Length: 223
Image 1 (cartoon, rainbow, N blue to C red):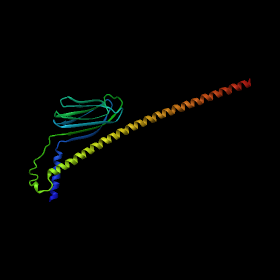
Image 2 (image 1 turned 90 degrees about the vertical axis):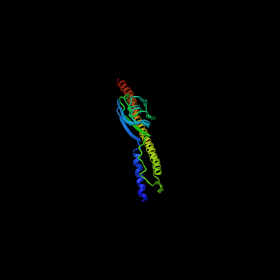
Image 3 (image 1 turned 30 degrees about the vertical axis):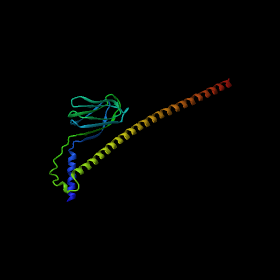
Image 4 (image 1 turned 180 degrees about the vertical axis):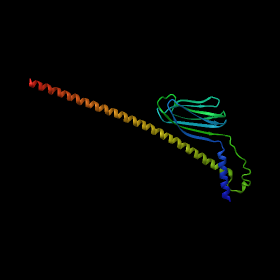
């Protein structure tokens, strides 16, 4: 009986957590040259919003980044940046615009990692008076379970966010290394071709000089 009530308490906690109003998105975006990708997210006044972006691959690993409020006011603008982490308090309720701009590039395609986390202070909590009428009879209270699970969920979210960031950094470093590898191979091939061409040219010139001398000597002897 005690285990059944404990499971009921856990189920109730997850219901409460699902309506807490927290927002978290992780996206990997492919932005074409000369293009501008924008995303809209509805946020409420009083929410704490944190935005992070990193250019993983493409060109010089830079983009323009703009955050715009529902009223059209520009909250943040960054030009030709590789990465950025920004936090701001939402003071307008409505659809906020987050834009990744690659219009300055004509040839390079950019791959960008984008993360949005928003924590709302407004939470919808049902009345728990009827959920547990005799709370003092049980060793484990619903509030204690909720607090413990809140801590676990928060740590799991931080771990997941950290892993995503590390994964993006690894992908970007791998892309830079592959580009450097291709450049080194290309220039090495060009240099080898130039060296071989110069060596062959020298051999042909020296050979031509010897052939001219032998021809002149045979001509003098015949005369």
